[in-house]
Image 1 (cartoon, rainbow, N blue to C red):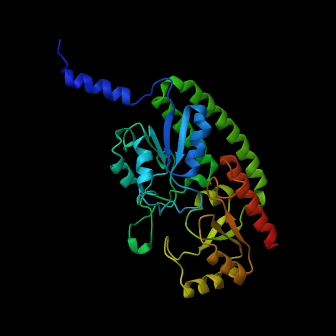
Image 2 (image 1 turned 135 degrees about the vertical axis):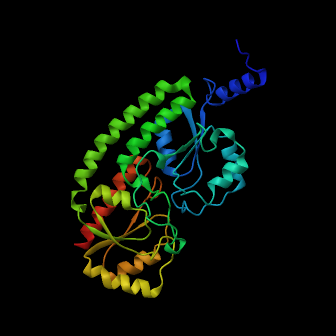
Image 3 (image 1 turned 120 degrees about the horizontal axis):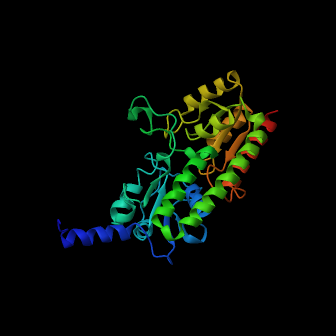
Length: 307
């Protein structure tokens, strides 16, 4: 019989132990954005301890890799992020500086939500002259709750793998979440019927999943290119096109500067509608279910205000 070197054996034992936790311990989760913190909390219950790296009032593209975030990631058992290079400006630095093998890409403790669903708006060519484009596709997948169903199922399985002592709880909560969300989606789609076919101008290219789900149409953007501030000439052209395209409202996120949307609103005489974008973006969006409910109510109010 071939003998296994003691060093190799000990390494294998250590690696196996690193993927699971003691039965009494909580899974320490580092969530890159509020939507993943909310989802992990819903699936993990009392078996997880969740830290959120960003808030709904912050642009997830523009976060600084602060020492406090490095310290949090250093002690994490699981990192749950959007991926698709949304956090490219800060998460790689945190991962490198944390020196935490458990949450490095490829390890069981690293979870990217965008890896679970099909991405939209994948660019046909990569050219930085086109603005801040995402090579893998649009990463703002939380706009469609149907994506959340898929991601939740995958995340519940990952939590169970990392914390097998509480696997039954993750499975049970995952099933309950899926059933509740499926029922809620049916209600939201019925409630949002008046939004079908509505043309909107958006601030940044982050609403395609929401508008696709609700049957709305994006016919203009305040940013001429993703991440590029608009100039006066561009805004003047946009204002000329709004009546021709029968635009009903301009929508923007809670973390964005409202001045440009409000300018367009005043000049074009259409409502400017601020949407929460993620959990915590408005007082009403306290969890994922509130997020979609409040978003639809705000859009319907915008249609009603347009007349």
